Each structure stands twice: as structure tokens, then as C-alpha cells.
Length: 401
Image 1 (cartoon, rainbow, N blue to C red):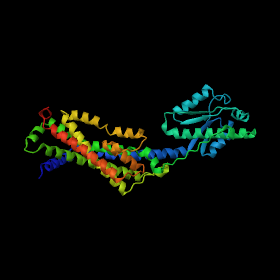
Image 2 (tube, one colour):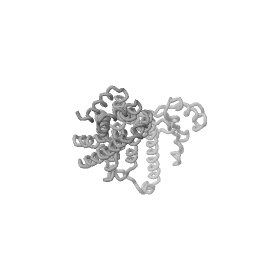
Image 3 (cartoon, rainbow, N blue to C red):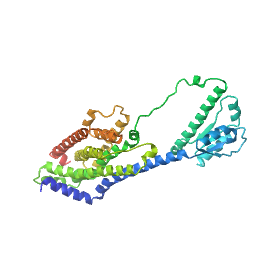
Image 4 (tube, helix red, strand yellow):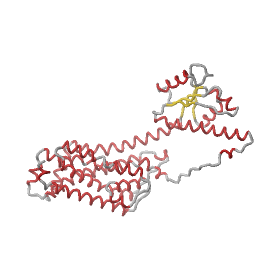
């Protein structure tokens, strides 16, 4: 048998018996899709809840027109009884009672209408209403936004009626109307939400094979088994190659698993309920595999190179733990990037993969040659890193440190 194949089989056999290596392979691919399922179901539930709003109103008898308008737009109105004189609508006692009810989570929000509301509206004057809320409750934000938008819409309609009653063309105070025309497709709109999938895939490549990569370098040195291994009449390139391919096997298995489970999770989520779409065919899946599989080779080659510098297993964990933040960089760059994918990005490890996967998620299928070129560049970087790792094992300072 080839020496590198012997090392490969030995490392995989040892890793399959190592609980840490197995956990690092499975935990991230499983947590990622579960997070996607939880997030999308939460978004859909919040959207459904925003359509069913129960609005507590103090002083609802003072604004019958506004209350009717809110009810016509699907808002359920409930009467909120407050202590104190209703004529003194905004008294400290009444506002404190509302604040206390919100703090005790009896209500998420409440509308306070003054006693002179109808009189001021009839006189053509402005009137203030108070919408009490707790801004720290993000789940209630869509409901609050819808209530405020409806109250402001009622105010605009009232203003138009006032002008028409006075024989004034309301267009005089509305010189410009802005019509927002969204040309984005449902799948393109999904990019903002599904943009984390490329991050999950890249993170899986770094997390799934890290156990073997660290154990095969810093772990060997800490157990004092690296020196006897190098004494054998085997080229050091074969030893590094076997360890690298074993770690890459786990890494590639993890990223393929996370990709498959993410696609399965998205197929289980009713994205159409939130106006999104995720359509992917065999060509896109093949391109994604072509461009992501080399991530396993790159991540583990970088980890093995860094692991050779570590003096102990704990030391390597610190270095590689910091290195695991690298996949976050292309993700944040993509968030603020307004120019789209450019050719030079194919030369940057992880950035090319992030941009290509983002295009697939957004419904912009890149050319197959782009996938192949980015994969070739990443493999070139991987072999370069492994070459450097092999050269390091020729230095006594690295071996005996």
C-alpha cells in the first residue's frame, strides 16, 4: 500500500473512535439547518401574529371614527379601563397605570385617546394620541408598526376631507407622489434572509475537520509520537498528505451534510408565505458541490499548517479557534458589497465561494466555468499550504519545540 494511504486509513480509524472528532463533524451541520427552520418559522409566526392585533384603547368612546377605521382594517379593539378622571386624559396617574400594565406584560402596547379628540378634529385642529409600547419587545414591533401606519393613514384621509370640505384641491399639498415599484423577484428578495447559508457551509468546512487536523499535528507533538513517526523511512510529504486527506474527508463530509440538510430544511419551510422563493435545480447543486468541496481541502490544509506551529493541543485550539473567525470576513464583505461578483474575487479563498453561493441563492445562476475556476484556485491555495506544512516538518525547531 502507498504510505500516504496507510496514514489516511489510520487517521480516519482513530478519528472515528474519537468522540471529539465525531462531535465536531456532526454538531455544526445539524445546528445550522435547525437554526434556519427555527428562524423562518419564527418570521412566519410573527407575520401571522401581526395580522391578528388586539389593541387596548383607553378613551375609545372619544374617537368613534378612528376606532371604526381601525376595525375595518382588521384591528380588534378592546376597552382599557383606567383609574382617574377620563377628562384628564394624559395625567401622570393614567400614563403610569398603562406603563405598569405593559411592564407586567398584561399588554404589549396600548393607545390613549384624549377626551377632546372629536372636538378638535371637528374644529380642524391637530390632536395628539399616545401609543404606549415597550421598544425592547421585538416580537411586538410588526404589530406596533401596523397600528401606527393605520393611525397615520386615517390622519391623511381626514386631512384630505378637510381640504375638500373647504373647496381646496388636496393635490395642492401633495405635489409629489412616490410609487415604489419593486422589480426584485421573490428569490432575489430571499438573498437578505438566505445569505447566511454560504456562511454555514464555509463554517462547516472549518469546524468538521478541525478535530483531526489539530490531533494530527499538535496532538502528535504533545503525545511525543511525532518524532518516532518521522523516524520511519517514509517521505514526510506522504505523512502530511495522509493526515491532510483524513482531515479533509471529515471536513468535506461535514459541508456536504450541512448543505443537504439546509436544502432539506428550506424545502420544509413555506417561504411563499413571507413573499420569498428558493428554486434550485440539479445544475445549481452540481455547481455548489464543485465550488464547496475544495473548501474542505483548504480549511484543513490551513489548520494543519497552523497546527504545526502550536506547542500543545490547547495551544493549537486557541490558534485555530481564532482562525475559525475567517469565514465571517467574506460574509460581512458581501453584506456591504454593492458591486456584485467580480472576477478578482475568484482569486480570494472563501470570498469566491461566498459570492458564488449567494448568486445561486438569489436566483442568479453563474456560469459553470466560474464554479470550476474558483474551485481550481482554492485547490491551488490548498496545495501551497500543504507544501509549506511539509517544509515545516523538515525543521528541527518545529519538531522538537
